[in-house]
Image 1 (tube, one colour):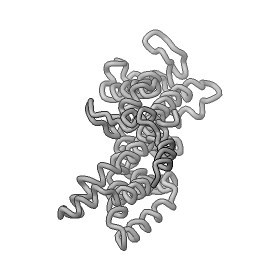
Image 2 (cartoon, rainbow, N blue to C red):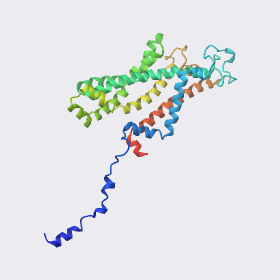
Image 3 (spheres, rainbow, N blue to C red):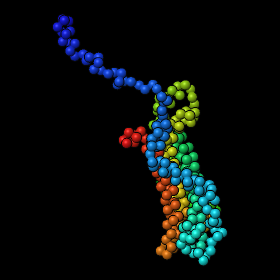
Image 4 (cartoon, rainbow, N blue to C red):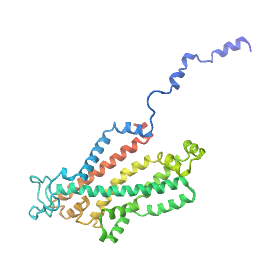
Amino acid sequence: MSSNTRAAQQHYVAPVEETPLVAIDAVKTEGKPTNLWTDAWKDVRRRPMFWISAAIILLVVVVALFPGLFTQVPPNNDCQLSNSNAGPTEGHPLGFTKQGCDIYSRIIHGTSTSLSVGLIVTGLVLILGVLFGAFAGFYGGWVDSVLSRLGDIFFSIPYILAAVVVMSVLSKYASIWTIALAIGIFAWPATARVLRAEIFRVKNSDFVTAATALGVSRFRILVRHVLPNSIAPVIVITTISLASAIVAEATLSFLGVGLPSSIMSWGNDISQAQRDLRTAPQTLILPSIALSITVLSFIMLGEVIRDALDPKARARR
């Protein structure tokens, strides 16, 4: 190769100072390593919707656990027909029901019932959904076929309709546990489907292959590696399911197949007040507002958590 050719080729070589490799390929080595949960927390704590919904949910939980901190008026023992559908008075800021019971006191004491049903249903949905979804997604084959078809059967039945049938049959045994079981036993397939799809994605990851190569048992891989890395969508759907369960309890009580009238709940108060909507609308509107605010708070929290656990959603903002 002649010297003239070498001189011509030198013009096609970029100068070193024009290629800032250090700036392009630099890797941050300082600071603590982050993961999905750390990034999600950094995201949610900057969003006002998270703090608003969390504060309301915390208030609801405190009211449910310690109703005596918010009212000293007995919800049932201080009812006088002379106060039927009366407006607010001193010591009774929201007025009275048709039976002369304090509306504010009944809302406060009914919080624990509605929240208890929601928590029991959510726990049952979480247990059944995780068991069915995890085993179906991880083991596949005939296990997936059997569990998926069983889930499809339950998924095809509207859980509100199924709960109406169950509560109609078990009307003599109506209680918080009965209505929670009637709702939860038919509401788990959505959670199972979400987890199954997520486990299908995670179980082919490199860390699962490495654990298998090291001789770790399949069940241990599922519990220690696959399930913790697949649980994020389940947390989101569980938060929203809690709101749906509270609404379901109110719906069943409104239809007359829910909790007995002796048990205070927002659904029972709304059901009993529907006849007086024109003459005393506050008896229906006020419990409905308490129900709506609580349900909306759980839905808002679920939406915030969903966006925080989705890297694509964080990138779009």
